[in-house]
Image (cartoon, rainbow, N blue to C red; front, side, top):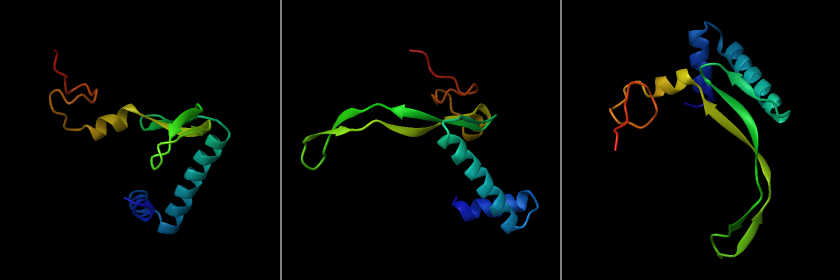
Length: 109
């Protein structure tokens, strides 16, 4: 699903025009982006939480030459999945699915 398809779904389910739905979606995404830029955590209960973490500097390799390179420290966005979202994705678990859902039990060794 892309952004325009998401706008259409929101407009349909919330009984809004597509213009209003797009404006609302843009506002939500801008608010999340601004909060993350300020190193805040955004928590949407049941859906998940967005946070900013720092990835440490490390030594890597150039895949073309094999030469070692230094990769600088940087901030990255992290998303932790909420319980409701996790359960909706694993709606029909198989026994031993390993996803951590309560209905699919992992096999004991």
